[in-house]
Each structure stands twice: as structure tokens, then as C-alpha cells.
Length: 191
Image (cartoon, rainbow, N blue to C red; front, side):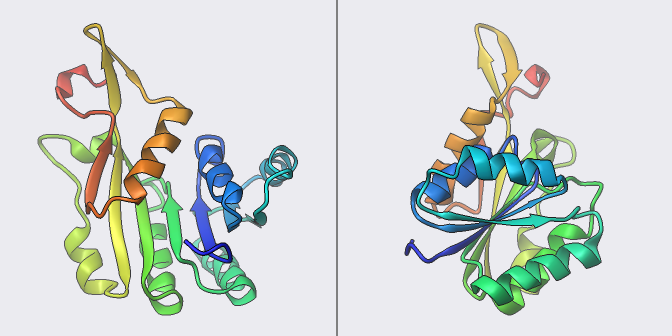
């Protein structure tokens, strides 16, 4: 990735703070979508010593019109987005598709990484948007990463923020359409 690369991180900046740090350490421009202005201020303070730059986008992705307008402004100001890492909750059903439409039009060959909770791997009703993304957004490279859980000594637990970020960093460099951080089996062990 060239150092002038524009990366987008959407959602749960506490959980994804390590991702922002990873990109900043590599000199990237990181546009960060978070609802809370305080979150942006804290990120700026905590990560100000790193060589990259943070472009704060204080918007709630539930407000799709404002969300897309704000990301469009960022693209117009800083150039196309080469990679987006997106943790968008399922109750904002249209937000992932609105963002994909924008990136498909403005940032061809962009990699769109969609983070999904472990429920996306439920054995009885698994979630999979690959066909839709392949046909509707042909200029994007679409990847799904499922955030699973860890089984230790016959007990299970959710992933830590550090494990999530390390897993995402590992998975974004692999050409797998769908991958899992941790495990999603046996399903009965899900915390």
C-alpha cells in the first residue's frame, strides 16, 4: 500500500482503534467515521505521534444521507478510498449498501471489508452477501470477516479488541472472500 493511500474505518472506534493505529503507523490517511466528537478528539490525542493523518468524520451511519454526504466530502477532499473496514450494525440495514454504492462509483478497485458478528455464521441461517456484491458492485473487492469467539479449556469467550484488530490485519492481506477470526464452532460454545 502506498503511503498516500486513503483508508476508511467505520464504526466501533474503541474496538477498531488498533486498526486506525495500524494504518497510521504506515503513514496512511485514515478517515474515521464515529458518532461522537469526543471519540475523534481522543483518537487524535492518543495517536498524534504516528506518521499518518486522521480525517475525522463525525456522523452517525444510521443517518444514511448525512453518512454518505460526509464520506463523499472526504473522498472529494482526500481522493479515492483504497480500503474500507466496516463494522456496521445490522439495524442500519441500508448503510453497508449505500457505502458500497458510493465506493463502487468513486473508488474503483477499492477493497470493502465487512465485519460481521458471529451470528452471520449461524448453522441454520448463515448470512452471505457475496453474490449481491459481485453483481451490484463490480468495481469493489468484497470481503467478509466474521468475528467469532475463542474456546479455551472447554469454555468460550468473545474476542478481545486486540485479537479482533490482529485478526483483521492478518485477513485483509489474504484473498479470501470470507474468513473467521477465532472460531464459530462448535456453535453450542458460542458465549
